[in-house]
Image (cartoon, rainbow, N blue to C red; front, side, top):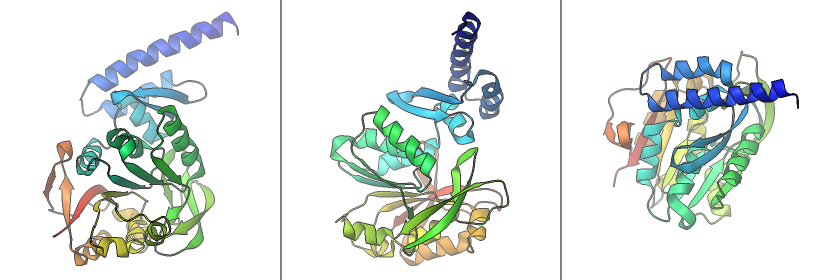
Length: 291
């Protein structure tokens, strides 16, 4: 390698360390925007970085992807939701991550539960599955079962689409933006649990870009069962309507099963349900079934 290239690479790495120290130490409201701006300058030529995150978690990240940029430079992602998931998982518990993406919540739960617990990570996007498996390998995690399928209310094969720069937006809905598409197998969580003798789930996180109600209908037996899981479910009005439903229908479906919605606050603490998100917003709600 030419000396100039070596020197340039050294400077880029040094600049990256300075940027990380800045973006991870401040709590300023604009730090995410700052991270996106500085990333254009210090990002490696191929876009990939091995990120060492708080709590000693390692993740291989693609800095051309907006979600992964946030994880790398801020050292966190959905902090309130992460805290809620971990506080709801008992020792030796079972966590089901529906829409696991590249593994943020899966990795945190696996570290929290240790060898006594079990995680089932469902992710249909092939690139995300590759990165998810790689991140599990980097951390020596062996208590996670990765399933490269989508969860829905029936068994079928469908087309999904995702943006090339947003790994977290793979969806069954029709999208007008430039996308990449792929074919995926859909299954019901009720059927999966029966087939694999999975009798207890403590926490189920669902983030599937508008298909949340399909997932819930496909686990109706689990939700009605004697050991109902705690749910953390994304409610995105735009994506739900693209899938032919709405936030109101989703919340009503769970309420009819005895579940009560809650807002998730700082530290994962629950607050009384007040309102649904605005049309162009989204929120992750906790749903707890009444005794």
